[in-house]
Image (tube, rainbow, N blue to C red; front, side):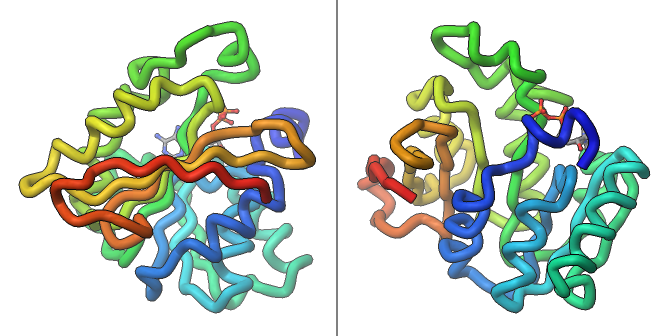
Length: 199
Ligand code: ADP
């Protein structure tokens, strides 16, 4: 882990949950892989993972972490800009844990999607849709949930969507939005369900 990794890696219990919810199967693109916390859990369930990060040091660390967990055979690491690589990628699920802008996200009451990096959440979602409609997004606990629901309307017909709060030992750590086949529920008209989960 590097210094930044300690606060930016997805808590392991939540990464396990994300992997369990990855029912659309096959190949998973981890678009902002960081230290590899999510990629490792997808790989541990036997998914083939394409793990992307723009920072070669992060990729080196993630690759080493995947060896420690014994899942390196399941993960292809790519150093590159997800926004540029996306049109050439194929996968059954796209997992997005984009930069939240560091720990300062906590000081905002309502985290709007334009605060995500490297581009706003709408643009990011549209790029991910070039890979697959089965998208999972891990977002700050104070994210504007209405805005997240509205992302499903960027597709026609609208994608199924489910939003889940992720708690660890009673503390809300983040919110995960599941779209397309990764959403549990939903006929097209029933576009939102809120499921509160303790992991
Ligand atoms: P947080 O604000 O949640 O701590 P980071 O700034 O650590 O997020 O970013 C998460 C990961 O995304 C980092 O490992 C970073 O290198 C990576 N990253 C940032 N921009 C891109 C990009 N355009 N393509 C791929 N990976 C990126």
